Amino acid sequence: MSKKNLIGLIVLIAFLLVIPRFFGNPYYLGVLVWSGLYSLICMGLSLFMGYCGQISLGQAGFYALGAYGSGILTARFGFEPWPALAVALVACVILALGVGLPTLRLKGHYLAMATLGFGVIIYVVADADPFGLTGGPSGFSGIPKLSVFGLALNDELRWYYFVWATVLIFLFFLLNLVNSRVGRALRSIHGGETAAKAMGVNVAKYKTQAFLLSAAMASVAGSFYAHYVGFVNPEPFNLELSIHLVTMVVIGGVTNLWGAIAGTVLLTVLTEGFRTFFKEYRLLFDGLILVVIMLLFAEGLFLGAAKKVAALVARASCLRSRRRPGASTHSTGNPEAAS
Amino acid sequence: MDPSTILQYTFAGIKIGGIYAMVALGFNIIYNTTGIINFAQGEFVMLGGMFMVTFSRIMPLGAAFPIAVLAVVIVGCFLERATIWPARNGSVISLIMITIGGSLLLKGLAMKVWGKSSFPLRHFSSEEPIKILEATIQPQTLWIISVLLLVVIVLALFFKFTLTGKAMRACAANRPAASLCGISVDRLVLLSFALSAGIGAVAGIVITPVTLVNYTCGSMYALKGFAAAVLGGLGISTGAVVGGLTIGLMECYGAALPFQGASSYKDGIALLVLLIFLCAKPSGIFGRAAISELKRF
Image (cartoon, rainbow over all chains, first blue to last red; front, side, top):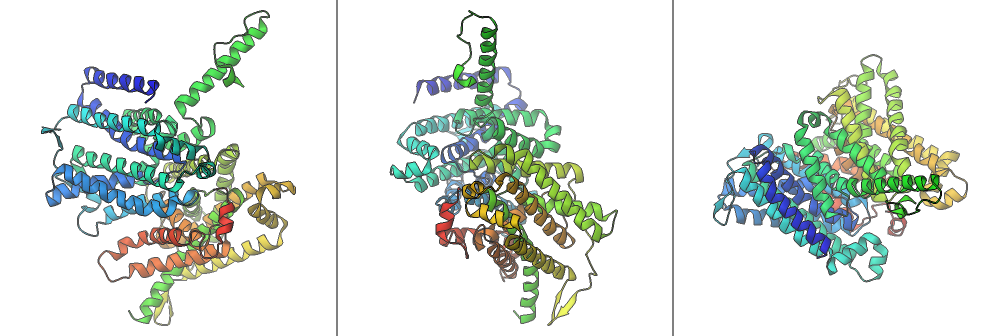
């Protein structure tokens, strides 16, 4: 793990520990729990999108599988929450394998469209309820609370710590992964698929693994969702959510795990803060963000905007030094960024 | 199952399959000139239906039809100029992301303009079913079939005999070479968006009397049209028509299967076909693997 990432992790942990002192209100903590759940999904998605150059438009489907799997097994079949989570996870990964195996060997859009279809179909099946398990459009409740080491997660603060602890564990794991042999292979795929293949990297295998990991993380988040809310219905798991998740990743910059978390928290807080606005304009907002960021800030809003600003500063100071002959030619900004 | 029931399902399959075929044609046109899959293709279908519903309130259907198509063509051109053109040198993944963003924008705008409810449209001619061999066929189905035929014939003539059509085929075969021959690829990309927006709109207009239209209906058409395009071989027009009709028929026969909840799995069939074909023969029925290897994405 690089020093930068280690410092980042320490700062994040300190930040997370301090937040409840200032925002102890259950409502604010709830928003942060949601941010944490989405962060879990978006970290996996970021790994997959950023390093494999693929788009998954079905993360809401995997999220739904986790939620329905955990919900149905615990509420209807009397499973304990943790084994239920494991069963849902395995089922989700198997289904992801079914979608990913045929499409990831191929070029491009096939996976995007297949995952889109997958998400839509999970939604349709949950809504139509062919086996009398999902409760149809109105869903079902009675999902028990989760407990960790005998400690029941029965208030927002505990959920906050629990979800963000999970996020940190996964973040630590993913940061290590990115800087490992596997990570180097993934980055080589990102750099150029043909070149990676020529170097002996099994591109299809790594892509499939990254895809399965992203599906598994979405499933875990879904299981937490079911236990956190105690109620599951199809409405939240629509196609819009899948695209919203992609938007969160794109805002932060696709190849940046930190960016994925930052983008997720930003969008979740914004969506919650301007609830009435987003109820009407979420589609337009997401569409605009995707288009604008792809056109202007390919590296994500934070890094891209920072570079743009640095370039502007550099250019401004350049102009200033040109106007005053004899002044120092050193600029405060990054001169390379200006070119 | 007796023959007349089978015939009945066949009519239903051809009806919806004709729509998928038109969506697949739209995918192919843009794919051939740009090498990207336009995720906003389904939104063109939805917009066609929406504009038609609006215009049909103030004018006869015959007049509303071309105006609605024109409106969607303008939207398509605008979408291309505003989002695809500025990113034309970007990577394919960013272009796809942009078409996804574009589809959201169109969907979001449609929701603001027309609201969240579903709209009906009156049938083009009488709703009196016609009896054929013990089965009945709605006149609207005949409309859909004839419109599909017309679209296919016009497209075939366009690609075969006009200079622009030939240029588009050249662009599909080899983009840099076409550009070196003095073909303005830029303008062809715009034209391909206009064309596929138009075809999408036509599909949306003819299906709306049967299925209603609301702002979310586009993604399902896009998914199934894409499955149809892959089934026939991405980029191949004959393949799009065969693929579309096949998927439509499979859906309708699948819904008739005698097990519980079969009709709710109907929507899954297209995806299943897509996955099976991608496993077995990714280049589709009419495609050749060597050609798809050469594509940019």
